[in-house]
Image 1 (tube, rainbow, N blue to C red):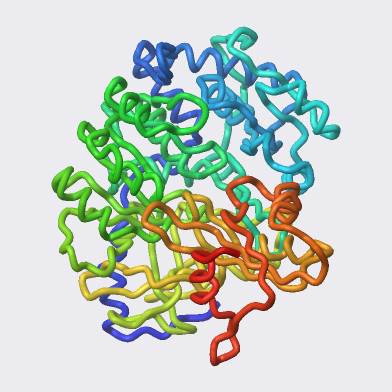
Image 2: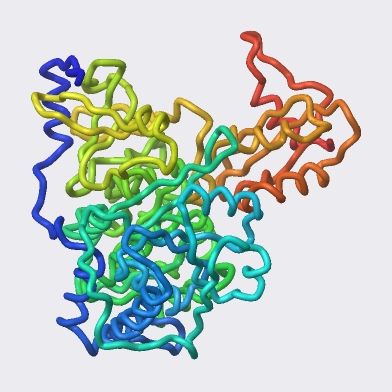
Length: 521
């Protein structure tokens, strides 16, 4: 195990950055922690959507009943169960039931292409699927046992399976984009969920918390939204299923007295532009997922005042959030907003080669602590590349190399400096641009392609530029991608070019390509 070279200044700033660990129930599983909430507050509301409410006791009974049914169907500890349910109380019942069986849930979207689903289910060895779209999925999923889940048919039971789930067992699998064209399955432990939501430094999470569940369950922000409420005895308020409308969002926040809210950067910008008053009643607004817009942050602080806005950062491999930065005041001429410091029971190191970085010296952001995933499903080489062990300040650390670059400031905050590769976040989803390019270049007519992101105040946009050596259209290329990629990865625009312009150094001239999108193609 290599020991990092470290100057006194580098050691000092990282000791300042990484506070002492805090006590939390690290040896308890999610079902055990939820059961404690249910015993403490059986009649309190647990899940609310519109005029529907499930108390903690009702949610516990329903999850027990479904868990017993799954065990009877053959689900055993360590098995993976797919979940494809609309945002609903039944979704929460399904997730909790799978965990009570000792299984792992694998969220997916019915709109994803069949080939992508085949890869996901093969890598995760997923044999069961819980869904509210059973007839449609049965015709597509020939290798899985499709189990229908509906409000009318959920069984109930006072007792659940007699299974003790370990804190280091896998709770769920999130698949993120991969540059080779193959998505990567990130496995997350029960302990990592506990680390995220207990003794939170970035928000107040307790019995008084009412969190809005807004993110797709395929997006790891849902981990915070669901379990941040339910493991404390708070309320998980489900936004109505379907697309988010800003006017409706404000109504939901006010009607259900939501206290904590996470918004992806693009959605946060849109809310600040169009309905900023919707956030007026909130205790904490968390935002992240893309580089923040300074203009929108300045306006938000002006409207909301100090003590309420928090900028968060974190890859899926470190369980949703890794750092936080309260945004209490901003100068209009500010050029950057730090990603801040690590959240509780998380450590961050900025490393350049074999050296720990001192203040003012940029390097790769590496994360450690109980939030780290075990690795990637079926990808041992990639796991060994991204998860490494080093000796830092006399202690052995298991690190996740994020591929993001940061700059430590003398006060212990970290400023984001960009990525080493072409992985980006758009609308909160982490995307490898290389995966899009991979599929474009496997189209028979495509000779060259270049995929990039155009930063915009309303949210970054994916753009693709293609040089073809056979007749094709933007629409045909989009159809080709749609058969292979989820909707959130489809470029906003695919532009056919005679050639890809180059800079003086021989690289593709990204700026020239983006500028060309303003002209008729």
